[in-house]
Structures are given as structure tokens and as C-alpha cells.
Image (cartoon, rainbow, N blue to C red):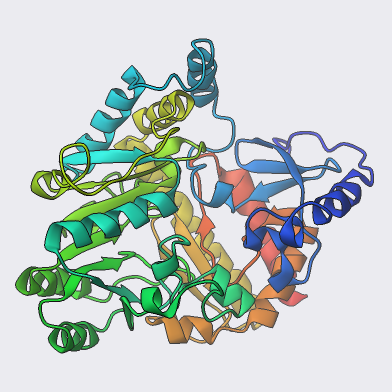
Length: 433
């Protein structure tokens, strides 16, 4: 661990910041999972990040597998990304018109994800998913949407029906404030169940606008697509005259350079992106077939806008990040992920612990259950209390995991041999504990 940034002596600053935050924000946080409630620990206040590590307000450093919830594929504060943002910063912030950076980042995205023939930037993944759904309704003239149990597509009203991660972590089946009429426009079917998709389409002929899916589920932990599942829903949507939307906010530029659609060879009609394409800055994007995107204003009747969409600093960070994502980086991520997966499995077996490890590329989940889940119900049957104990034991040993059994670990290019060895060593002790 000689590569660790130096620890400060520490103080009680973090406890004071948590107390002050609790007086300001619901639950003391600005996003529910940050409260750490499902793992029974006090929330962390993080002040900085360097490569594969983050530092809390009391000066303690941790090997980080939250990765800003996905964007930190290069690690924190990568010098090239920092330099790009600083250069853009000198020219001002939002200028209220199209910037060259929007064109550059748009071209980089389209080159990597050819199905996005035209695209539109937003300021968040929620906005992008919401806009893609509105577009699908406007383009088809239909109202209903099919989603999969546990799939999380942002917190717009219609998508908070049987959502994953935060809902699963908090035990909330939906959300107050969502009108029944809106919830009724969303049909929920089990993931990896083509018969259920077919039955839903047959039960609502000519009224389903779109199927939206995380091609690799990552909000109930990592659950990969069953063989032929993505191909099957591609065929079913086409036959039904509906659109297929891949929500690749997490998987885009994560499981492969071209996202899950590149990895699995299935082309959706619309794609939703976020996370990595902003290099850690707030962003979302949706795009797809040219004829469908022609419905978006000002070209068409489907309205969507955003004052800070395509923000110059975000565009600079995103372009700097995407330019560094070459084939060798993905090869390295695969090797790192495989080494971590093997080490964690060995550590659990040595301690006599029953866990199942699911990994696709640089996404990983340690499920406290017997067997890798293939459905949402199987994932949700994991031992949450065991995960909470494991989380605490790892945190005490300097490794920060997602504070929920139902979130993916994010492996980054900055995780080197030292970090992987430290993580596996901590896991050996944590599983025994």
C-alpha cells in the first residue's frame, strides 16, 4: 500500500458535517443511497479523490468501488480530464448557445454507438430516460411502456413503478406523489422472461409505445441478460410496432466501448446514456434512429429542452474521458475485474461463506446468496444483513463498497495490482469476521 496518498491525523470534522447536513437535507443527503442506512453505518463525507481512492473529511483514505456511481472509469481527478476542464473554464461557463464541445462529444459518442444516429444532451440520466419515453410515445402515438422488475430508469413518475436499487434498499414499493393514472401507463414484467414480454404485448395490442430495459441490470446488483433475451425483445418490439430503448446510463462505455449493445450485438431504436460520457460532471443523453429523433423539437412536435444541457465544462470532461477509452484500456479492465472476482471468490470459500459473484466487464456484485441470480426476485432474496456486516468490515479495513447489496461495484482503470491485492486481503478478513 505504499502508493496510498498519506493519511491525515483525523478529527471529528466528519461527524460535525453529518450533523449539519441532517439539519439541511432530508436524511442528511441529496440522494438516498448516500445515507448508508441499509448498511447501518454513519454516512461518509468525502472531500477528495485521487486515482482509485477517496478521502473522507477526517483524512481517511479508502480504495473506492463506488466510482462516483459509475463515471470514474479512469479514476478520480485524472490529469487529462482535469486539464480539459480547466482549459474550458477559462472561456466561461454556460454561454446560452451551442458550443464546439457539444459537437465534439456528440461525434465521439456516435462513433462509438452507431445506433445513435442523432442525439440530444440533457443534464441528467433521469431527464434523458424521461425524454426518450416521451419521444417514443410521440413517435408511435401510443401511451403504454413496458419495463422490467427492478429496472431503474431515473425518478420520473412513470418509472418509479417497481424500480431497483434505492427502492429495494429502502424497502419502498413505489413512491408517494405518483398519480395512479401515470403509474397505470407502465407495465412491469420479470427480467429475462420473454414469455412475459410476449404476453404483455398480446394483452395490449397496438398500445405499447416502447420497451425500456437495462441490457445488463445493475440496480438490483449485476444481473446479466439470459441467452437470446435481448435478441428476443428486439424481435418482439419490432413485430409489435413498438420501440426498443436501451437504458445504458450505467453500461454505456462501461461493459464495452460501444456499451452493452456493442457487447451483445443488439441494436435498439433509442439509447439513453449518462455517467461516463460526462467524465464525472452532470450529464445525460438520448438518441437513436434518425427518423425517430426527427420528432424532437424544433424539428418535430415532441418538446424537450434544458438551459444547461451541453454545458461546456461537462462537454470538455466527457470528451477528454472518451478519448482515453481505447481497446487496451478495456482489456486491462477485464483482466483487473477477473483478478478481483477470482480473489473474492477464493476469500469467501476459504472463510466458508456462501456468496455468488456476478461480473460483466467492470461491473461486479457480491451477492450473499447461493448462486448468481438471473431474476430480480432471486437478487432480492440475498442476505442484506450479511452484506451490511461485510460492508462495515471492509470499510474498517480501508475499502469503500457501495452501501447497498443492490448496487454494482465499479472497477476502474486506476485500480492496479496494489489496490486489488489490498481489497482481496481485506475481504479475507471481512469474510472471516
